[in-house]
Image (cartoon, rainbow, N blue to C red; front, side, top):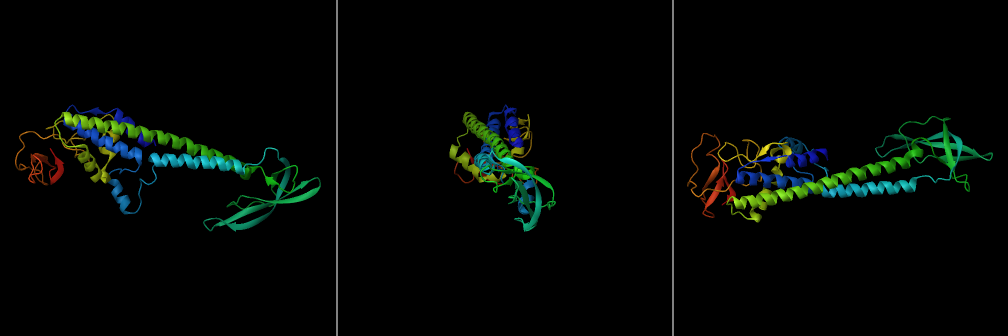
Length: 315
């Protein structure tokens, strides 16, 4: 949850680019990251996760999101309710007792476990009771314990000290902790989604003002196609106080801090009216420089060349 809070504060502290098209692209990419993080809590954490995924260890599993927060609250409440059923009555009469024997058993993992047998006296009569809790440590026969029993039924005694006597309290406070942390996670998720939607809408508005004619559906589909590459570390969510969106011609790319590679899912800046017919030569080994060129497919006036191939971005 702390990392997700960091994403939110980083975004709020971001210095957005003065270039309208680059600023719009950066806002849309960051908005998509925040919405995905708030809704599911399982967006990719960068290229380093690829190796862990390949080895079968998904480090994003169970991180939270809306459903995770709601489920956490439900589980915590269940723990707190169960604690009321296993707690001893308040009117038990307490008497001294001792461990008279040990029952050997196994736990859920097949390891050896132990259950205590107690003896205690009430009005000169000896009673026996068996522990409801198993332990991996063998109890010491003859050790002293405290037994509580209802006045009307002395034979219904139970241990009321030690771990067994505090088991219901452990259940209650564990449930309360889960509820509190889940509520906090849920609030953070909602805040991420709200801020993400606002950023995405602001980015679309600024793109229209910059002259882009690409529709909302095309923007959403571009992000969905690259959803597995969404990386908060390359947007405002993961860069504290950085400038987002490089100014056109500065050697950077739209939607990223400084002059790094394009942010996944971020559309390119609006095309100019005089885009060249073919990509110009470039010293870059992967191909011509990224930019707007006349669409070789004839679908739109211009199509974005990302330096390696034609993309789906048109304008």
